[in-house]
Amino acid sequence: MKSPALTELLDIALDAAHLAGRVTLGYFNAGVEVETKSDDTPVTRADREAEAVIRRTIARHHPDHAILGEEQGATPGDARVRWIIDPIDGTKSFIHGVPLYGVLIGVEVEGIASVGVIHLPALGETVWAALGHGCRWNGRVAKVSEVDDLGKALVVTSSISSCLSRSDAFGKLCERTRLQRTWGDAFGYAMVATGRADIMVDPKMNPWDCAPMAPILAEAGGHFTTWAGDPTIWGPDAVGVNGKLRDEVMGILGKEKRHGDGAG
Image (cartoon, rainbow, N blue to C red; front, side, top):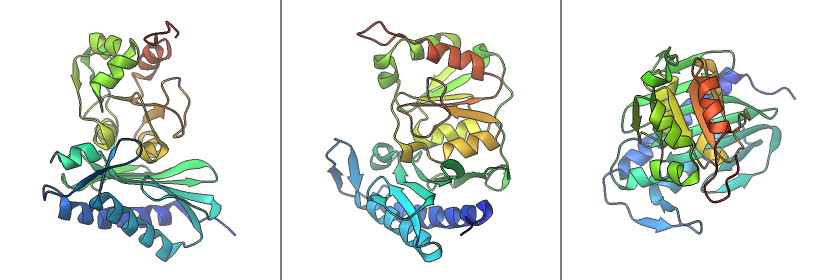
């Protein structure tokens, strides 16, 4: 059986992301109860209900497809197509009333991250892409920035403290870049894909946190890799960067000295 067209999968992902986004907005700044998962991260009713909406939307079109979600885990299916979803990326922001959280939906086809949607419900922004079909931001063409001087670059991250405690790499980036901000999680990668930021780094990553980022950044003219330069959504960390700063940024991250062991 032939895999569905990427444009069809993208249409489904966009529909699912917007439906899930409406669910989250119903709980945003509404005093939703917060629970703590076994990994000490927060979860809310909004997370669970939004993921359920995404799963139902996918199943309505392709009940045989495999799904991996942050809250409900893995659902087996046709291994050629796997949906990877995070109903609220940035739950900590969400529960504190910060509007920079996102709904993430990525699709792997034959093991390649091929479709991606970042939907930011509280901001009214959506960034999406399918390999070979370009990247869009609320319907218009999205492109990474043309900044080619690290001294003029804006670097963003989900957690400055986590980056600094990992190694010397983020400190070196801070020293060499013009501006640093914690516009992190999904919003940070959306900023890079739309040319509003130049570099996004995460010292720790799960596949559902970044499944859409690889196709989105590739189609926007940027790069998504691990700190070691591996082009995968299954790595332990992540960096998104425009095309012109890639080599310089990866040179800094790739030569990091981990705190405590002195290793690069």
